[in-house]
Image 1 (cartoon, rainbow, N blue to C red):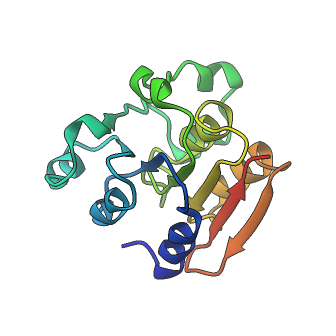
Image 2: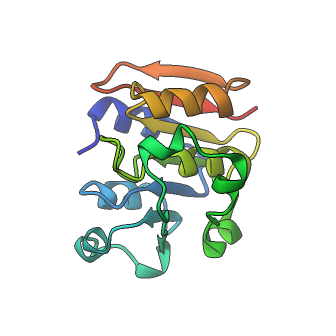
Length: 171
């Protein structure tokens, strides 16, 4: 479950929000879904998580296959290797988003898919000026590196929660 500090911060950002994207279809999906009027979209790679989301309109769940990418591989992949993993066209067609919450895919060990692609896509393909991107578990090595590389020119605020969460505003 997402830390209440993160939830409060996102709620405070929701004034006038038209569209939200959440990378992960975890237990708090219904909470995020309730924040917009049918304009919260979810990206998920695990079928079992999709099955748990029976209250979410399936047309707002985007299946993403992250291929063979892992946290360990993310540190050594070339730009060409990263670009070879295509963003789902249905996700790209929905962009840009006002708020993006990167809470998936799993990234807690070296064999997990990690969040390189959601963080890269959020910065380069899914956002616009003023988009607010939240990066959960921002204290982890891969997340920290991606924030530094992709969001160095952005306004950043660290939320004091377990594992860290960074709120980033795209200029």
